[in-house]
Length: 455
Image 1: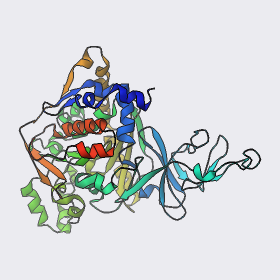
Image 2 (image 1 turned 60 degrees about the vertical axis):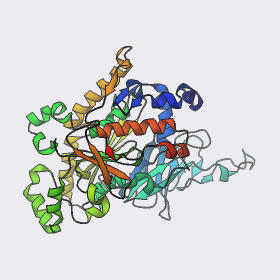
Image 3 (image 1 turned 180 degrees about the horizontal axis):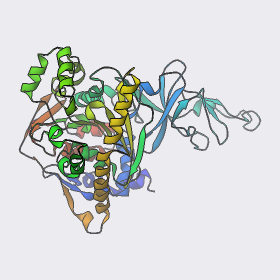
Image 4 (image 1 turned 135 degrees about the horizontal axis):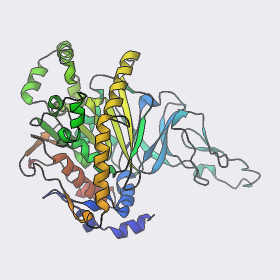
């Protein structure tokens, strides 16, 4: 395994920027296979960016904790006795052992199973067996607390970063990232259903991300779901009413959009009329958002019915019903964590219905995910062939044919057109810029702002 210095020697700035050409949409397949690039991703993307950790509803009481990952760094997110939330590296400062083996639970402190070092919920080292007898009182516990990440909350969603130079979470999200999270909360407060679905697919994490913007594959990859009557592709695809939103740092949303004329009609409806209209067309799965949603999603974002990705790897789908982390597990494997959301305090039967629907669409038992996973794994596998790895991916659909307009508060842009690959190109443009920058200052100075005009 290469360390950071060796990784950086293998790929310099010019080499990284050459891996994707935004003017042609050509992507070098080594992006999906190279071990040195993967190691650099852990440093320059995951350890540097804001990563989703948990939702407030998963840690409602003091002592509640969940375990998650920032790249390959495992972290504990815990609420202390004063109600403060802390994100701590799950590694003992003595010999590196993991403190938490359970994925979630409630604790008064975290005790290492190796030598018994004991840490408070805020990460302070509060007990060391044999401190007087063995260490002869020659141990400064104040210097040996658990390593702490920066943690911030938006709409009940906790994110963390290991980089002290990262901007504030709200600024990092920008209007497009905030629109994505607002999609989940558009109909009111939500909570996570217990039991995160987890499975591993033999693919690179980035192809699992770029697929969420891809509506070109739906009638082909998911044709069997349509034939079986599980999915009516004609009702969900809307190939000529697509809206892609492009945000700071690589955030994007891609998929069907509500035309301005139709949204103008919705804007004239009361919330009661919107609910009645939603019930009348329940078979489409489209629930019209209430008036208050525009405050969370903005006047452009509220028209989006697509899939947001909060860079690098947080996907929101089914209108905010589900959310998925694509956690990297080496260049050739990705672990998917599927979260299901229900309205806070929803009746038990309604929760069961939502869970049943979610489980049959995505996740390990999801009909659509089984189609997708097979495609992703084969695309990743082809990036390793002696000859096939020299061939590029061609992500040029719509390039130079559409116009980007300002969205929201001016920090984002949107494109309305037919199905295209604007979202995928924005992802890989951002990826090269994150990877080429040595620190946040360089990334801030050189990353692309959402484009306006011809794209």
